[in-house]
Every structure is written in C-alpha cells, then in structure tokens.
Image (cartoon, rainbow, N blue to C red; front, side, top):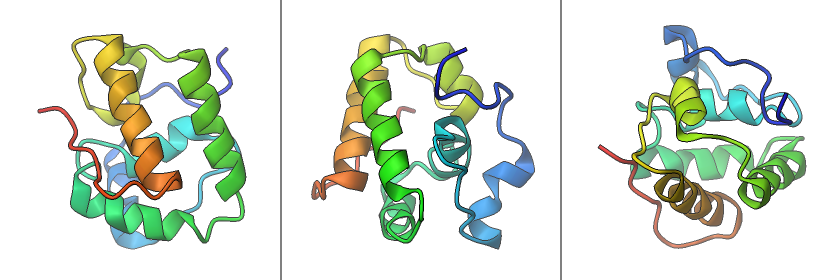
Length: 120
C-alpha cells in the first residue's frame, strides 16, 4: 500500500465541508486525508488555497505533511484515478496531475506567488 494512502474512498460530504466547520489537522503523513479536505473539487480553487496555505502553517504536522508531499512528487506513486477518488479532480494524464501537484506544493510550502488553478 502506498505511504500516502490511509483511505481510498471518495470524499464524503462531511470531508468536503470540513473547512467550513473547522481547520481540522490531518494525521501525520495522512496525505490522502489532506487532499480529501483541502484539495478536493470544492476547495482547490486559488481563493481556498490561500486560506489553506495560512491554515496549514499552524499544523503540528506541517513538516511531515510537506515531506509527504515531496515524497509523493519524487516517487509519483499516485495515479490520476487515485487522485480523483480522493479529490474528485480529474486529470487526463499523470504528467498534468503531477505538474498541478508540483504547483500546489510550491504555493503551499515554498511561497510561490500564484495558486494553481485546478482542472475543469
């Protein structure tokens, strides 16, 4: 099982609206859980990513999350189908998905100026 996978189901309506209830910190190395809440089809737009960037800086697991994200980018162990199951964002190719994820990583962790726009 890939390191990032703690669940393989599509985000529930509860997970998709967790941002509106509270800023719930993902478990350490729970990259799939982070994606379900913070990178799903409803929360991946640039406006929400700006709030996410601010929110995650307060997470105790910030460094672990950053390292998990970097490991995913290095290993490329998630398929577009698996990403879609966690986020409902659909990419045509693996290259497009990893290009988007690299931009998300740069925005969230490396202070890139512009948030990427998700597909669709």
